[in-house]
Image 1 (cartoon, rainbow, N blue to C red):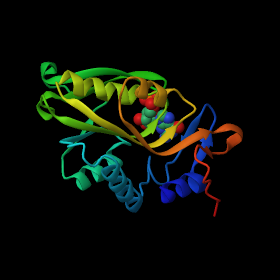
Image 2 (image 1 turned 45 degrees about the horizontal axis):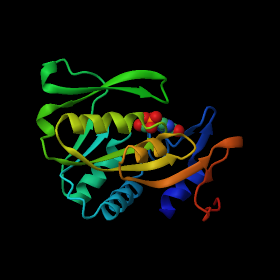
Image 3 (image 1 turned 90 degrees about the horizontal axis):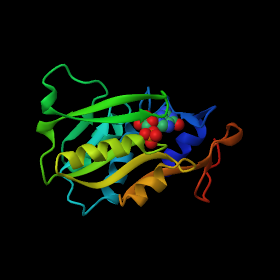
Image 4 (image 1 turned 60 degrees about the horizontal axis):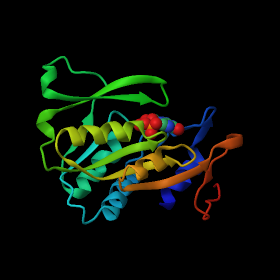
Length: 197
Ligand code: 5GP
């Protein structure tokens, strides 16, 4: 995804501790044309998987998630980070450690939105240690559904999430893969580096 790579290259800000800030197109202000392309690309990559729902986590996963769901013609569900005050027996709950906030959150999804036998595509903005993706996958599995795949917009390949998800047998598709954020600059995994400008 050339457009995405260019955006990461030109607008991404490397913070210390391995965090990339992309709040001009993904995490605060959102670029709808780019999000539409992300949705189309995930749909192309997961064609044939017979996906019945897309599942993400609030809030930054919602934009790529909804565009993917739109292209696939299925609903999007976003897991909530705060337990709803309504009946707890009606929700799936999983604990997820947040890489950026350095705290554990309970994520919840209402039981009425994932049925047994459902084929769920998990979508998220970033992959670091895989905590969010594993938490979402556990919710799908609690519901008796199966994970059709995991689609990540920006993978930080120098962190263990990629390896852990593949070892667990999930099909992972990441649209850009970052090899390093050292010295304040983004280095991509692929050889076709994008020139700034
Ligand atoms: P993981 O659960 O894989 O450890 O981390 C992924 C989650 O943490 C994503 O949902 C994302 O919100 C957040 N995250 C992880 N690394 C980064 C990063 O470098 N930049 C931003 N903006 N979010 C990140």
